[in-house]
Length: 162
Image (tube, rainbow, N blue to C red; front, side):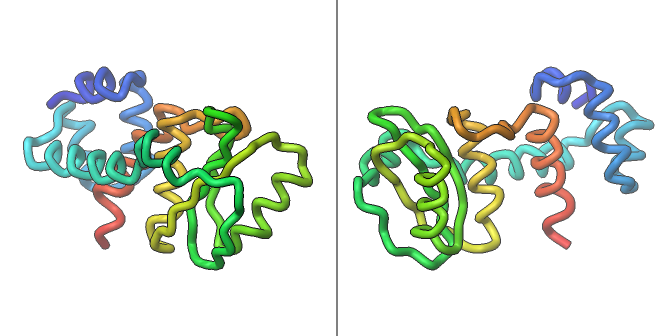
């Protein structure tokens, strides 16, 4: 697969694909840029990494079936969804959910329900980011852009395994 194909797939300019690979500073990036293509096995690794990240996303129906007006007392790693009527308005992560949700109430965020998922500490950040990417909630200011998403996929593919 050529770098142009990757750029089209992720809907980002080729220059960003090259830039992400150069910033990584690894041998693989140098080879990919020199050859302007990616081997089948490397592409398979990238595809697996992307699929693993996509698997961290929760379904809309599941989120709403977990939504409750009561805030659970959870002190474990959690991903939470603030919901106003039928709209996800914020997605966050916390190790102390009641305290974190209270900060949202004090800051004036409007929501009527909370859906909570217990997650592993190691997957907490990626799970939060991938769900923000999927649902693009109103109160999440730092929405994941395509360049950041591509960077996350490449990072998880080639660097989390070391």
